[in-house]
Length: 154
Image 1 (tube, rainbow, N blue to C red):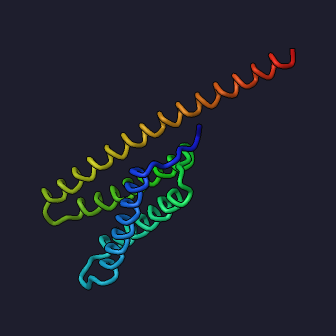
Image 2: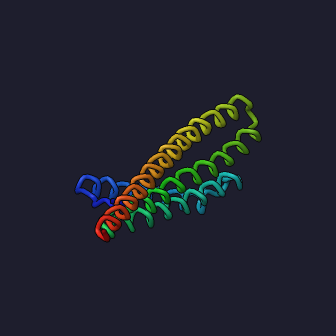
Image 3: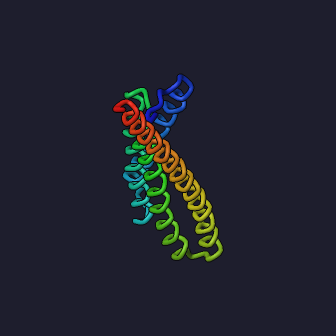
């Protein structure tokens, strides 16, 4: 009940995510290391993007290697990575927006980051609801098992 085998389309989709995360990590890392006139904040942001891209690659690669997704552990890790990355990038966008020379451009940066933060929050809440449903199903199965054991003893 807590694991789900990956179908061929799901494996393909996860393979695309794996390739995309590696490509994003490589691009971010390359830009962070090679751009000569890049200010420190964007360089740190690109470095952070590199680390998160590699973390996604490891996470998705592990799921693909198993051929199944653990609906509790893997889903929680994914939701945590989405939320953590978005909050961290929100901090970078806030700092960049507040220090921007053009105030309107800075406000636009912050507004766009808020849109992503809202989407990540919705994803996190959705994950927590699914996790609560799994916990309820698990508890119900435990109760059924206990009732079956009690009826067998009689």
